[in-house]
Length: 251
Image (cartoon, rainbow, N blue to C red):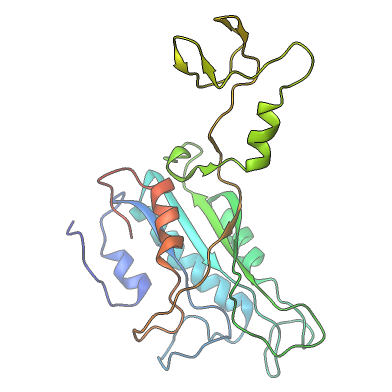
């Protein structure tokens, strides 16, 4: 399969032309329900009801599951919608519809493993004119897989420990426990153990990173192209580093 290719087609039909188990990682953000009209016939996001929207996405992502390798990862960015005037959403006007979780549960029922709900937090969200609720500043990123065991490189996206955590390690972990950042004659010690080394009892040796948590603070960035809803490269980069091996194929 050719790589470094832009495929400008209906997503479902384009996926049907890709070979099975040919992709290691997929990062995508489909048009959100009822929020933006791209002026295309039969476009995703302008269905009459949320149920029709969910059904279409489930169909598209079912084809993606065929294309994805057994150990592949699927990162799905999605946001919610409020029920507006004229919407046939089956809920009251001004209700939050719950699109992300309706979609997540539908995908799980269709065979996907729902592994994580990541909150994409933005300090510079789009302004809202509402005065009767808090303004929105986050979206969901669901990590889904087609198998119980899959490729995931936690070290590639590990984050530094907080300064306060480092300070607590250096203060020791109770009577008789001493943190040794450097053992005489051996240099810096890494890892966690309970060995005696050079007269130091190393009961809590300070790590330098921690497993990345499921709230990601990534601000939006300006984009001069013709896409009005481009997400920041850092967001896609984080998903790819964790979910795709070196030399793998990203869709």
